[in-house]
Image 1 (cartoon, rainbow, N blue to C red):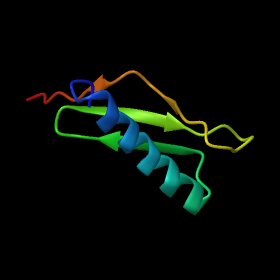
Image 2: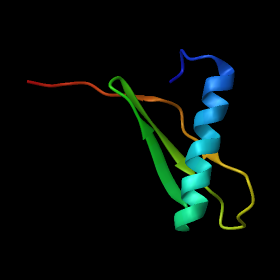
Image 3: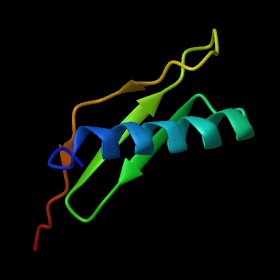
Length: 61
């Protein structure tokens, strides 16, 4: 997600925020094959969403 164009990231944030507001969730995430980004919507509501730094996904054997 980090390597994508800024407008693609904004579109993903808007999409995530839409579903979080629809379901009344305050926590969410975006996951890909390489990383996960956690999201938080403050209790005050609104159209604000806070994102964590990307967390790389690794495989251990």
